[in-house]
Image (cartoon, rainbow, N blue to C red; front, side, top):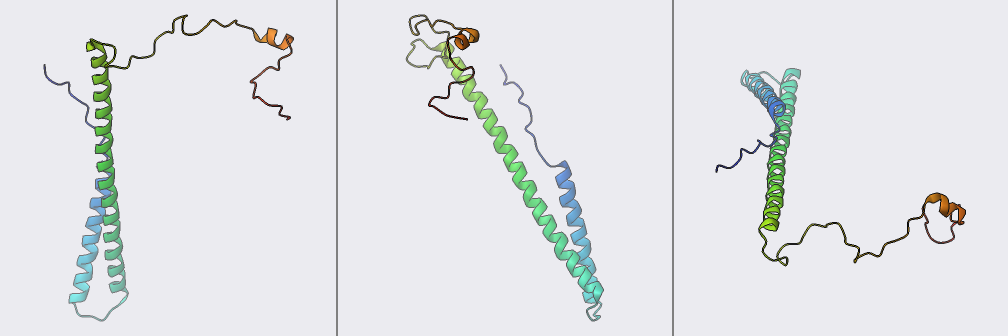
Amino acid sequence: MADPVRPVPHRPGAVSVFFVAKAAVFALGFWIWLLVLVLNGDEATGAHVLAATGAITTTLVGVVLGARLALQRSAAVRHAELKRLLVDISWNAFTAAGNAETSGTVVPFPSVSSDDEHPPRERVSVVDRVQAGERPGRDRGGDRRR
């Protein structure tokens, strides 16, 4: 029998890849503009400063967004793998409990306790407790004053 198709893990990125690509295009444009200004041989003007600032800023933004995207993707892969492992562990424990021949190999799930384990307690209503002199609410122990 073939393995059931597992859902594709959440892969962040469509919007993030767009912004990384957009920052890369702007950075490329600024670097080309700066290169053209420098090759013209004019003295440094405000356009040179603007092109250099834009090139550096958009390059840094692209690097930061790219690093963030890479971290998100690796975290998504780790999270999907962890979920897959938890499902495998729980499934293996379930099948081991069903296939166990002796009770010592598998820890059984808690079941309804028998009367032998816990002696029966007398149930007392809240009204009876108040009439008996107990304070309503939780007993926090000690003699605390409010």
